[in-house]
Amino acid sequence: MSCLRLCLIAFLLLVSTVSLAKKPDLIMMWPQENSTLKLTFGTFRELATYNGKTSLASDVVVQNLTTKAIPRASLTVSLLDKNKVRIGSGLLIIEDLTPGQSAKIQFQCFSVGLPVMLNLAAYNGGGVPTSTRTTSVTIISVPPGASLKVDGQAVGVTPTTVRVLSGTHNLDLHKDGFADATTPLDVNVDEAPGGSITITLGGIANDTIELRDGSILMGDVISMSLESVIINIRGSQQTFERNKIKKMFLVERTVTHTSIPVTPAQPNPVPVGSATPHQ
Image 1 (spheres, one colour):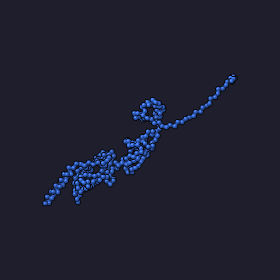
Image 2: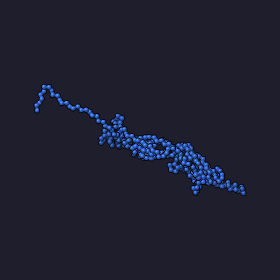
Image 3: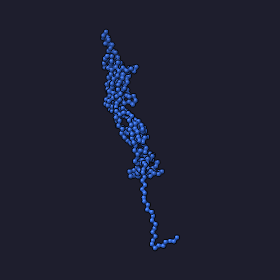
Image 4: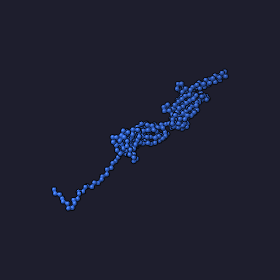
C-alpha cells in the first residue's frame, strides 16, 4: 500500500512538471507605457515543498530598453492563479544593465500553487530605476514665446513644462528678433518635481538676414532697395537680390548727429579808391 502511494505521488509530481514545461515563456514589459524593461520569464520549476508552500524558480532574461545605464532596480513579482488571486510573491533585483543590454537572472519565490499569470510592481516605491526616472521642469524665457529644443528635440514654446531623465541636458531657445540661447540643464536623481528655470534672451548685436535657402547672415545692413540689399559682413560688403531674402531683422541703432559750426559769409571788401555807385 505504501509503495502504491509513493508511486502515485511520483506520478503527480511528474504530471505537474510536464504541464509547467509545456507553458511558453511569459514576456512582460515594465512599465506598460514608455517601457524601460523587457522581462522574459522561463518555465517555473519546483525546488522543494515545505509546510504547504512550494519553492519555485524561473530563469528571467531582463533587457534594458533605454539609452541610459540602470545601476539597480527592484521589482515585486506577484504570482496569480486563474482567478487573479495572489498565491505567492518574490523580489526580483536587477543590477548593472548598460543601455540595450540583456542579462539572465534566477528568480525564486514561495507559492501555494502553480501560477497562471504574473504581476509586476515597483518594490516599496523604490523599484524605479533612477536613471530612467523622469522629473518635470518648467522652462521660462524672458521674453516668452521662444521655441524650445531639449537635446535637439523640439518640445514646444516657452513657457512650457517638460519631463526629463536625470542627468545633463542641453536647452536651445530661438525667438525672432533675439539672440539664440543655449544652456545646460542638470537634473539630479533625487530632484523634486515642479522646479523651473528662467532664461533671459539677449538682443541681437547685428542685423540679421535669413535667405530662402536657410542661410543666416549677420552684419550691418548698409542699404536696401526694391531689388537688392547690401550688408557689411566683417568688413566685406555683399549684395543679395531681394527675392533671395526670406526675412530681415534690423537692430535698433543710436544715431549721433554732430553739429558742424558754420561761419557766416563776410561781405566782399571795397577796394580803396574805387567809386561807390550812386543809387
